[in-house]
Image (cartoon, rainbow, N blue to C red):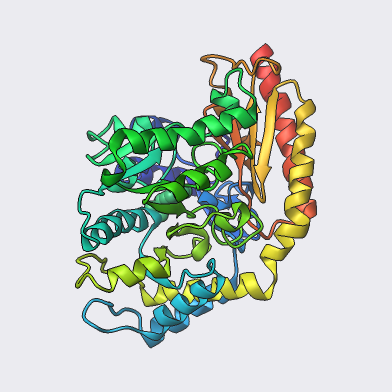
Length: 454
Ligand SMILES: *Cc1c(COP(=O)(O)O)cnc(C)c1O
């Protein structure tokens, strides 16, 4: 990267001297220096060198309404002047959190009318774990503690969140998972389906849930948590046979189903929630990211009425955060949802931009590096392979990282999960911007292929 702006070097020096960045190799980052993002508008970011970059990841999957919406800034500023903070602990409340609870109940699946707010998705899942165990204890079944999750799922980075997640590289640091959390196979046909057809593999992966429930004993299992579509794991869309079979299994056993909607929620699939897309009927849904379009941190847990009815009988729930339902975050979330509704952004994703993105992305299937293109709504994944027919990878070449770097250098943010390239652009992306995204993606695939051959 060429550095012409002297301020870039100053900021990088501050990074080296004082900042510890999340999910980073601290030493390597010092050598390379971070790219400094200075401002953004719509689907575009600008760095301190003046480069314009199409953000194919909506930040970290969150900037649903796009960058630079003054209404969100105004909502925050108005609320800060009116009531910048008050807590909800001691039998108090404030208008923004109450109005937001009602609006979320309106858009959530039927029968999900209550929300517990947190500061993040991880905290939403921590809340879930404690609420599930509290629920079963109230029902006189305190042994139903175990939460079943999936390998390569992502549920956050707190101790409970990382334990619920199935990222082994996260478990290796800090002696995770904590007790009472177990993982089953993920429905990742392209990577793990072997010789099975996608449909047969989907049934097999779903059956792992039943096998695990029977192994542990249904009297010890409290809940199953899953993302409708795994995001950070590589935009893994399960085979069509997966969710119907999981639903059958869940109906058979007395356990709770938690949908982690932190990525799929608020329109990503072209419906309000991923569970609407797959017609899942969860007891709880974790939310964050798109809730505020990332303009301010906020997460939460939406809880179904029958679960709330039990919790109502349990006395105090001894859990909460200083920033649960923060009034400024709630005001921003309300305005964000208003924009999503009034501008019919999700309807447009559903009928226009998602079908267009999915069609255009699949044109990349003809590229020699591409083994599969998949996606739903405004989520997409491109698998990079050495051999299309056998799905064989370029072992040990770090192809995903090579491609990601070419993207960055050519004005596109596309993330790499191993050798899977993933995208999740802002929901407001236009057809012309999708054309630009796909053209840049193809150009970067070409550059990656030449680098591999060179
Ligand atoms: C990002 C994410 C989380 C964690 O949210 P944070 O706000 O980073 O704590 C949880 N679940 C899923 C599916 C996510 O993508």
